[in-house]
Every structure is written in structure tokens, then in C-alpha cells.
Image (cartoon, rainbow, N blue to C red; front, side, top):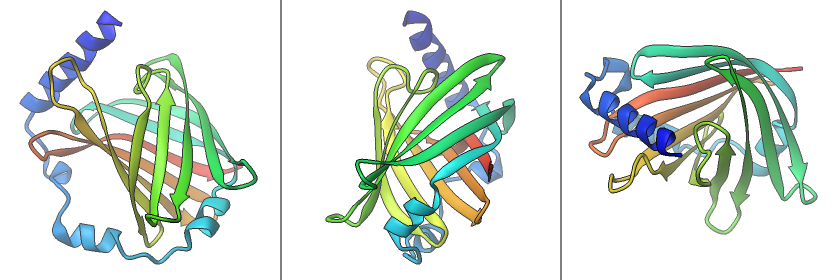
Length: 192
């Protein structure tokens, strides 16, 4: 666990000290407006994700520098009679096996999407909770995670976007405490 804390601290220092490329700038007001246009029907959208998926997963530890690209397989299925949905996945990261899962939901009271996330690499020490709004082709949720003891938590933005019936892209971004945004993980799935 100490080595994970050291890695997280080093990552924090590297990202904070690295110049941010233009494509990693903070989300603009126009993008926020676009992301909150509620074009989808949440229950139908989540049901449309059910199935087996495979594709590629890219990971960045330093903004703009691809650290890893690996094959990934995933399964999204309804749980509790379709009240919630579970996304389980397996991949590799730097030649080591990586597994994780998310629980996806739409809160019918707050009208917001919600995700809980755990895995054996990124979120291997806690459960991340994220929530957010519908978009034209999916949803965007934001949560926080701890990078080290006595360091303010960072934000984590996850975007679920259906490109067509057979392509799903899940992209996650680090959100630093000073408002910088950098792509961290991008999964491009194709339906099996």
C-alpha cells in the first residue's frame, strides 16, 4: 500500500508540474451547455448498453503521453431486475492483468446518472462515487479520489458516449485541484 501511495504522490507531482497540452484545458461553458442537453431516455440508454463488448483501452499517466494501450473485454448486464446495471471488465495495464467493475444507475428523483467504481489498479483502495447529467449520446459523471494523505482530492470525470449501436466509448479525465483537465483512460468498445 505504501508503494501505491508513493506512485500516486509521484503521479500528482508529475501531472501538476507538467505543462498541459491545449487539448487538456478545462471544460468550456459551451461544452457544459452541450453536455447537459438531455436528448436520451435514461432507462432506455442504460438498457442499450447491455451485452458483451471488446476493444482497446488506452491509459495516460502524464498528460499527452500515452503510457499503455491494451485489449479489453467487458460485459454490461442488468442487476436487480433492471433497476441497476453492472459493467465488469478485464484488460492489461503495463503487461499486468487489470479487472474492475462499475454499477450504473439513473436516479429518478434527482434525474442524474450515478456510477460506483472499483478496480484492482486505479481504484484499488476505495469506492469512487460519481454523478452527473445526460448528454446527447450518453452521460457525464464526476467524482473525486484521494491521491495521497493530506493532499486535496482530485476530480475524475467519466464520459459514456454511444457512437452507434455497436460502438461505446468510455473516456475518463483527471481534474486537478487548479482546474486542469487531462485525459487518463479511454476505452473504445465494439459490441461482440
